[in-house]
Length: 408
Image 1 (cartoon, rainbow, N blue to C red):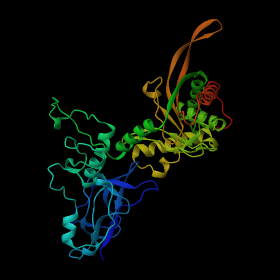
Image 2 (spheres, one colour; image 1 turned 135 degrees about the vertical axis):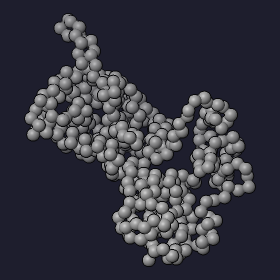
Image 3 (cartoon, rainbow, N blue to C red; image 1 turned 90 degrees about the vertical axis):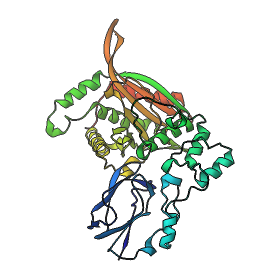
Image 4 (cartoon, rainbow, N blue to C red; image 1 turned 180 degrees about the vertical axis):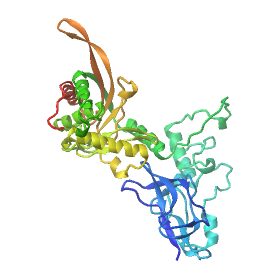
């Protein structure tokens, strides 16, 4: 008996998945648990496997389609088996129009006609929803460049035209750019990052405070750890691990920074769930170290490495990327002394960590060059005032300058 292959749900926050590669095609035989396609959420890449042994009788989406979870992507059965009653009514991807109608049995003729909505009589390829929205907002869409399939104008393009009236010059609009051009589709993780960064800056009142702290003790402690016995598991602890530890132990005394802003209320958290920004091949990811304030240095280091490797290898779990209360992002290894980190909303604060550099400092009537660590704290000024944020930075700089451990 033919069975449906559904787009699986990966975590409670995942609403759709992007099909990046089909490993099988219609007519191919598969065994149970064979990977039939690779899909990407906004957080990870995983494989969809065949639920049973059989033949792929029908595939409903192509590579590049963004498919809602629990929607039918294929049918597996026996050659010649009737599947008319299993064919979904429509298979419109999220990337086309942002919705999919409920699946309902129809005749094969109707399925063929409705697999993709008609563009209509207009020579301009625009979806009905986008056309109605443009007319309502009195937007001239005749010169817009669509981001939908085949250059089709969708609602998102109209919304972009409203927020960004002047589109960049493009080849399609008559401007020539000599030399090779690489076109990179903005979708999946890259699209999510773009949307979240823009929303963060548009919807919050961001203020960044910059300071630095004496890193001499931090460097000495790291040197001692590096020379410690390997069996203690301390020789691989990094400067970043030490900073994460200091942040986790300092935040509980400054709960205004360990909070979320939710329009009509502020949630202050007693426990620290520390977000760690990771530069992965798929883009920026922020896995979360749960209950970081309760962990030892060794435990924080181990968990940070586990989460970082999962992001780099593409097997991070969606739930491991949610639920942070404060974020640390470190560009110090790349030589950046200070920068303006962007809030990971609804969090109200994010700490940017810069490089360690020599800074002139007056000590005993003499100018000495002391290694200093750059720190940049961005806050949402709607939830946190400058003084409480400065007090947190002051406490953190003292904790780093006088670094010590109660437990390892």
